[in-house]
Amino acid sequence: MAGLRVLAMLPAHTEDRATYLVHLLAEAKRRWGWHIDLFCNPGDRDAFQELVAPSGGLFTAPDSFREATWEGDPQRVAAIDQRLSEAEFATGVPAGQLVLASQATIGRAFVAPVHRTNLTELSARVLEDNTESFRIIRRMYQFADELVEATRPDLLLAYEWEKPWRSTIWMAAASRGIACVAIRRSKLNADHYYWTTDRTLFNAAARENAIARSERDAPVSAAAADYIRNFRDRPKTVKYVQAKWKERKKKSWLRWHARFARDALNYYIGLVAARGKKRRKWLLRKLAMYNLRLVLEPRQQRFFRTFDDEELQTLRYIYFPMHKETDLPLVFQAPRWHDQRNTIQVLAGALPLGYRLLVREHRFNLGRRPMHYYRDLSRLPNVVLIDAFDSQFKYIRNADLVVTENGTTGWEALLLGRRVLTLSRTSYEGAGLARKVEDSDRLGAAILEALREPAVAEAAAHDRRLGWMIDAEKATTFPMADTGIPAGLDQLADLIAPELKQDGGSARQGTLVSQTAV
Image 1 (tube, rainbow, N blue to C red):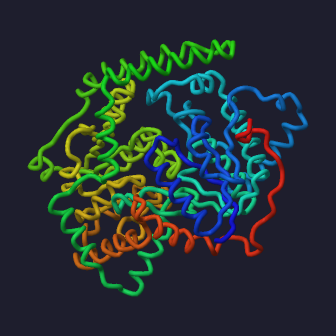
Image 2 (cartoon, helix red, strand yellow):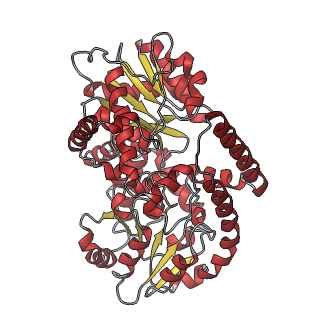
Image 3 (tube, helix red, strand yellow):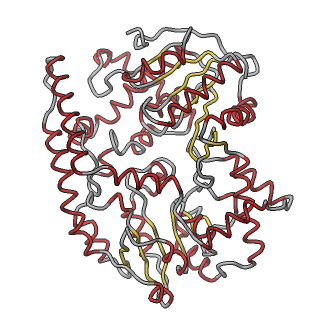
């Protein structure tokens, strides 16, 4: 780990996790003598300058949705396309998957018919021209390719790489065989992080650790047993989800409009300074869409039902909770199932006789969907839409089967002793308790098979598997506080050292015009 060249990608300096990562990287520099280059937003350069000093560089991205001068040169365009095609093949990730995972920006067309997310100038542009998204990816990759060539890192370190800029930089690095590692918040161990080299950002180390514990029939810790017992006595939503709900409540009508007015003012000041002819309509559309959501949300409540415990105990049903639209677990980690409307239709078409499909909407989607979305879903045979603000735990406790792509509801259902069927990889698959659909064509058969088996065949064995997963997650995570930095660096070394080049890395070469000096 000593003397590594590290290219880091950090969130905005105003975020708490950015402060934590700055402290972590500073300690890595002290411990191992790292040389750090940094890719960041233009507004973050001053805040991160000390981290890269004395010899590292700060790099910011060019304007990716304005035509670059090199696009007028067919030979250069062809050369960039060739490098991008080679990177696609080397990583196994087509450019379209990067677009799909960016549904809030360049992939807006994937979600536009079913969800009104905040409109920006960029999203308006890609909706008008359906070839523009791939041109933007090409521009981003051209920059990413030059960035990686200029910095020649031994290690790419990021807090995430699902967004288009970071994903293209990941692709440029991964296609060269450069080790890539990300830091992510644990879903199973509150207030803890983990490192992952997995492209889709799962804690693969926890999965392997849990499997190893099961193979040697390891004892389950008292802490894990308490975790299971406490959840069953008083189930509660995953902490980071609760934090999102609290943050959402802080965004009052007045605060949102004050921020909108500030952003609009800065936008027009930029127009005057640049003397450019940018689009203005999207600003008014963004304002209209926000207020339309406030009108639609109460009107859409008529499509949703609530049930009490007594009703649910007499109802045979499969429970399907929806994700927040455009969320990372769906569009990046489970792209096959990114269209939740389609998933509900597929599940409705696989319902056994006598069962209903209870679909619980995500509260962050309310008011953002067109009215016909809920009207059409509510007309599907035996489909019932459930109020997003009703407690999910009574629906989980009484469900004959819980189906999820990869949501934490599946983990909560396992803790409560319910049958679980997953459609993609999950953060808890190391427990080996959920039935995973490997072949979507067999979804109907998988549902029938799951319903014929007991929810829990043997309680003690079920709880041991839960305990192994909990202990594995604890063993592979570290606190989201400065006190956790030493443990975080130790775990990083354990994970990364085997992947690093034995020759100590390659020499730094090349130049890049977008470095901080510009």
